[in-house]
Image (cartoon, rainbow, N blue to C red; front, side, top):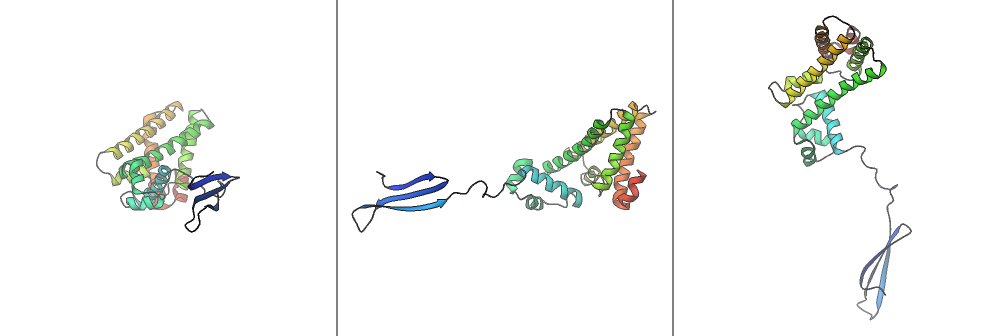
Length: 219
């Protein structure tokens, strides 16, 4: 027979438990039974669509770009991402780590634009046109508040990890454009690349000040 205590069994998706003991008023063993419906996976609350790290980075990207890095405090990011302060520091070791991840994401976005163009054609001249068109579309659709790297540089005037990341990004961008210009047979490929970098800088800032509809076609 069953000993004294709580006995639990799962029957047909239903959790049943029994308490077995001695009644205080009668000299016999008795059983109390209670049925507890089990919560199926279909009934459970759906998990959040992304990891805590991804939510933190998504929140920081939107806030840093739209409002400014130093204007956005840790508490605001934590609230938007729906995580704890401990989680933020575990994932990024502080706000500067989150800033670096934000800028790395922006860098990867521009690299993806080049990769997408490379899938469309292997002709350097065509690639150069596709990249320019992609930058124009980016100014219209996504980066409507200036260049995230220029904005970040203005908030981090001193040398350090943030400025080093910005410098690496700009060097990669300039060198990639130089290679495309050289492959397209343009004279002074280095000068062409430098000009395109400056034009993109100006177009991003001008798009914010004057409106994308005016700046996009001019670029």
